[in-house]
Length: 110
Image (tube, rainbow, N blue to C red; front, top):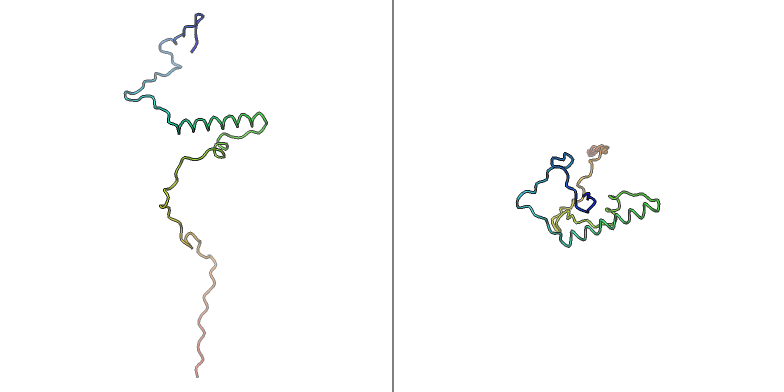
């Protein structure tokens, strides 16, 4: 926020179209950060530091690639013991070139 010569903050004029009117709904308070969120924030900041260091060395990489390589995923894809594994032969394509069946040989008459 800009300050005047005495160090007092200068308030923007009322009706400034550049700033939207933000209203916090009732009952919505600041959410406290837990240890897990703090750890995740530190990990992202560490990725940013690595990206900056690599950029200074001349190796540009995207942030998404660094995060996939360094950070552990918090997502649980499926609960243990509930995953259905495919059975043998499931998902195989039917043979498009089957061998023709041979006709049975006739028995000799005596």
